[in-house]
Amino acid sequence: MEYNLQAPEKTNWPEKLALLPKDDEGDINWSKAKTAGMIKPKPGLDEKATDLDTEDGVVELVPEGKPSDKAVFPHLPHTEILACPNCHPAIFKKRAGAAPITMKKIKAGEYCGRCHGPVTFGAKSCERCHPDQG
Image (cartoon, rainbow, N blue to C red; front, side, top):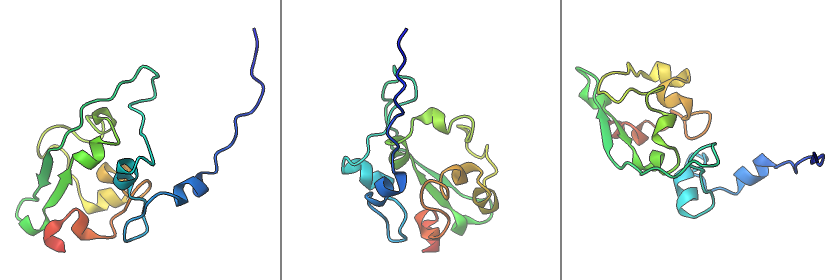
């Protein structure tokens, strides 16, 4: 049996990430990077994983008694990069009202906060998710 004892070349991730397009707040615009062909997300970790269909539905989350706090979730920019099982059912149930999402929980890294904050834009610009707040 032969072994490859050569260490893989290390990637300078800060340098690579600096090349990606940014939004107005300086966060990486992953959707623009994908559209420009700068990134090509894998459909999964398994080598046999295949691309899944994208979903372009928009979910509106309206808190009871607070219609001006409505949040809008567009699936397309998410499903172009992530397969549905990344979020469903572990993070979000596919049933309206099943997740008690609050800004406090998002800022604590739950629900949307699993990615928004550590990976992509955080809760800095309210109008990005709450169109009536802008």
